[in-house]
Length: 463
Ligand code: UD1
Ligand code: CA
Image (tube, rainbow, N blue to C red; front, side, top):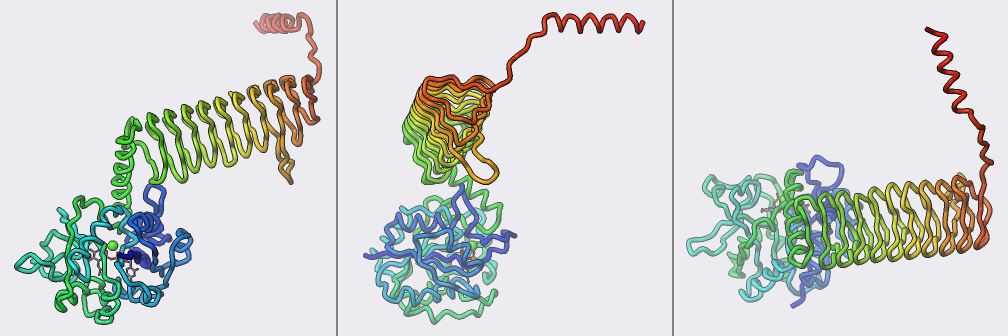
C-alpha cells in the first residue's frame, strides 16, 4: 500500500500570541511542522504535502523535502484538505492527515493507523486519546455498540457530549480516493462557521464506508500545541522521550530534566552528559565523551573520549581525546585534532589545530592553520582582520608561541620556531628560528627601595 502525508499547517495559532506562525515554533530546537514531517517520512510516506497559509513563506522555508499547497483563507481543517485535492489527484493509497501542531506523534503510531484502516477495510482510521481534561478537543461520539459514530467539536457539543473524555487527536489515515470523492459534502453550518474535516466521519458511517478508532497508548503523544504553556509541555514530553532512548542505549544523563537533546543528535556508548547541557542540530558525539556541565553543542562532531566542559561549540569538530574548556567558544570551521586542547577562555573560529597541539589559556585563534604538537602560550591572539579583510596565520609543527604573542596576519611561523613572549609578530618566522619583537628591558638598580624610603621620609615630614 502506498502512503502519503498531508500536513495541515496554514493556521495562525492566535493563542500563541506570536508573530511567528504556530507550527514554526520549536520543540527542543526543531520546528513543530518539521517534527511532524519527519515522523511521516519515518512511517514510510513517499510524499509529504503541507498546507500553508498564514505566513506561508516562513513555514515553507523550514521544509526542504515537502510539497506545498496554499490555503489563502483559513476556513477550517476540511477546507485545508480541499486545497490539496488537486496536488493529490493522482495519488491512490493511504493518506495520513496530520496536524502541524501535534509534534509528538510517533512513526510507529502512524503505522498502526495505516494498518488499522487496511485491516478494517475502512475509509478512515483515526487516532483518539482518553484525556483527564478533554477541553478544547473534538469529542468521539460512539454508538450503542461502541463503534465510532461521529466527532463533535467542543463548541458544538451538548453537555453530555462535552463530558466525553475520548478525544480526536487530529491524526487520521484516509483512503485518499474515498476522501476526495466525499469531501465536497462538508458544510460549515456549525458554531465556528468552519469546514470541519471531522465531519467526514459521520458521512463515512452513514455511507457504510467505515470509520475505526485507534486509542493512543500514550496520550502525551497526541498533545496538540495551541499555547506556549502546551509548547513547554510538549518540550518536556519530547525531552523525556529522547533522553530515555539515549539512556537505554548506554548514555549516562546525570540529570535528565537538565539535558536538552534535539531529536536527530547521535550519541555513542558510555558518553556522560552532565547537567545544563544542550545538544542540537546535526551533532554527533563519539563513545565515552564527557559533555558539560553548562555546555551547548550545535551542528558539531565530538570524537571519542573528548571532554567538553562549560563550553559552546557551533559547527565545530573536536578530535578523539581532545579537551575543551572550561569556557571555550569553538565557532564554525574549528577543527581540533586528536588529543588537542582548547582551554580556558579560548575562542577559535575557522581554524585547524593539529593533533596534540594546545591552546590552553585566554586566546583568540581565527583563520589559522596550526600544525601538530604546537604550544600556543596564554593570551596569544591572531590579528586576522585588518578592518577590511580576513588574513590567515600558519604555524608549523612543533612551534612554540610565547605568551601574549600578537600574530599579525598574514603571517607564517615555521616548523619548530619560537616566538618571544609579548611580541607583535608581523613578519614570517623561519623554521627553527626565534621571532622576538619587543623593546629591551632596563633594570634601574635600587630604584624601588629609593622610592619606598622617599615615601617614608615624606610621611615623616607630614607628622
Ligand atoms: C482540530 C480538530 C479537533 C481535534 C484537534 C486536535 C477539526 C474541526 N477539529 O481542532 O477535533 O480535537 O484538532 O488537536 O478538525 N489548519 C489549517 N487550515 C485551517 C484550519 C486549521 O491548515 O483552515 C491547521 C492548523 O494550522 C493546525 C491544524 O490544522 O495545524 C489544526 O487546526 P486547529 O485550528 O488547531 O484545530 P483545533 O481547533 O485544535
Ligand atoms: Ca489544535
